[in-house]
Figure: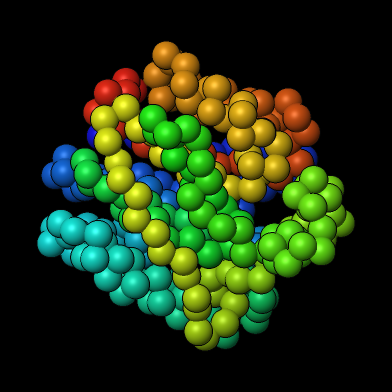
Length: 250
């Protein structure tokens, strides 16, 4: 299983509040994570970094037993509330970080399946023989308005409150996370990203780039370059996972 992680400050922001990473285990398991931090006084980057660091630590210590989708979900369900509590506690101990939080999209993958956890508006997409599909659901105000029929998807793209989240990690004591498992087969590609990419690069362009014969590293670099060319107002983070048939590594 090949993977690449890239993050970029973008063209406007003074610092990068996104974090991410790809963690392997004995060549059999792979965990990919993207977190888009939020909060004043640079607290967003603290929340997102704490998320990645906790995932990496827990992965190194406890990943070995995961073999089924149920075990993958159970592992994610054990780690994510721990991260939520850690962020909340840090904000209590450091008042300047009050209100900080982060989105999260994590994919725990084997050679047969990927189990995805998500909260906020960072996304996971799957490119397979069935096409290019968004696996996750945005937890945002505008997506709620779209689902209720109050606005169209087109109107949501330019809505003034587009960045308002209805859920995030580290903002409430109880955290509600979406979990979904998809099949992962030779030739499939999984894309995780922050909204700095999904707000600037269309699904059609993402699919076109992932379909190319370039190595994964070049695909990731092309996606980030395109987001910057289209404005780059936000931090941009990308993880691409390719099943065995893909070239490239991370």
